Length: 578
Image (cartoon, rainbow, N blue to C red):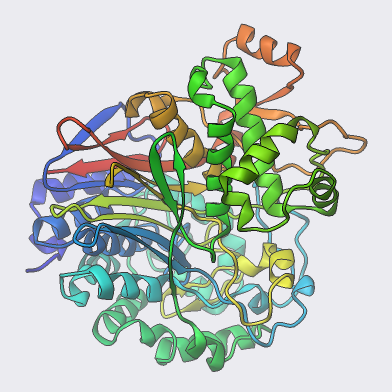
């Protein structure tokens, strides 16, 4: 048993590397994949999908494959949009117990960070919800990471392969290098000033040659390979109470941060009972109470059932369905923020303020009756940005739906690098969220993978990432279960986009304009929306890319029992099966 790419079929390895270099133009066509013994769907890294497929073929479970994929994704992305110092959220269906499990390996705050409102503001670049960045201690923008503890926790509970094996593809590509693609070269150009802020950041950049990496260069990550090998042999505690954890604390403190070894020792990923609701005869599971995104998904699905979306056409063809779904999503998002004006409105209408009540059928019924009176949505949203999603089904019927993220813009702004791992700045845009919890507590997370059951058996698994990830998740569930659409039709439909802009001066209309991809709907469709009182705001391809949700999924054919997934142009989802 050996997952090292040295043992992969040369033609398969070469093809995966060529596809990786061609991102983001791929996939170039719609392709449906059917899995009899195993199925994988994941974002952005064809190399990692091949690594996961090898794990399945060598007797690994969905957990082994998901761990292999996630670890490899970080190495091939050079820690840019996912990170070993990032976070992870998992839903796992274990076939032998017929039970769904939830794992939250999100951020922890620091015990010593008692004034989070004064944490310097990130430079989030082109993202539409960015604020004016502020100067200050970069170390204060960091948090205790959960990714590696989450990988280990998932593997200990559900894995079969030896723990060091799932690291082999990531270590191989760290040691032997990744060919810099035009996309990665652009990433370096756009974030050079942040990476080069520190000597260790400049050393990280220079791992291809002296100067900024260019397309075609070979980027070696020698320090990272040493770190990964140490974790694979010693366990995740190496990154918390071991040498890496100590180096992390020292580096963060040197940059004015509040991290201590006590913070690292206290970190524990959270296993919890998932939340669930029924939707048109299916049971939909989302992460448990330590996760904010799951509440939004269940609230939206309950409203969709109450407002009978299944009796309307697909939202991309039926303006009434579009208006209804847009209203549902906006209300669920507003309910999760619950600004004072909205909380007052709920009290006046006899609606519960309880977070747990929000995901119940009675709450949906009461809210649906008064939704036309929802007050002005005048609070700017500052959602987090999540960037790799994975769904795996193995030969035993186990299912992993996993999302993991750096939770900020490419590498962040800190310039701190520890053991070859750039340290992200996820506290630099979550000041309000941190102020609402106690110092040292877990930070609420928005990633919300979904596993849906039908008749006691798995029917659909989704993992979504990106700014509009909740909208992407809900529209897929609605498309599959309410509209009966094929996976191809669901994934090809226009994304539903979150409006993250701060309100304009004097803007009081509610709801705010619905953002739509430019050219996605015909003029008559948009005119009908306008006549009904809904304004739309076209978004360019680049704008859509920065705010859309991106999902990968697997669904079972109820007649044959075969699992299917789909690759879709412009979505950056890839799949494999055997």
